[in-house]
Length: 131
Image 1 (tube, rainbow, N blue to C red):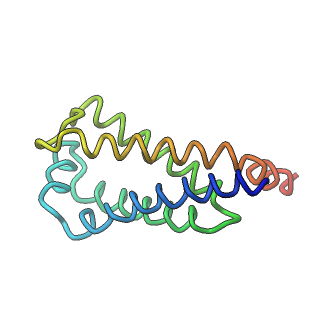
Image 2: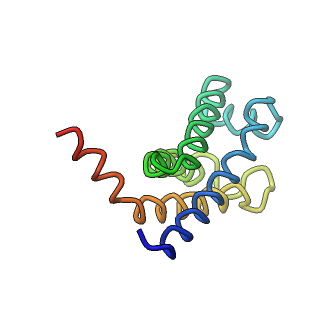
């Protein structure tokens, strides 16, 4: 991987990790907005805790150089679910946030997609070692 790709990947990894990490406090502390969103989805409290744990694992993987590809794929899955929830049940604008959570999910999805693309060699190398 060239130094330019490494720089782009690390920038995307850090942006995605920061966005995911800052939402953990709200999920684990039972913040009113977070409880309301997961209640609206019909999965409160276990969905909120499950999403929080999954996002925490994603952050750790994104910040681990050899496992960043795995964190990227996990992040793509989590953010795809969040975006789908916004498009179907929650609405793009939820509780008057101006679409802030939806935009953060899109940014995180984009960053994780960039990391997955740049680090696809690590992904294929992992599966090659299994053969």
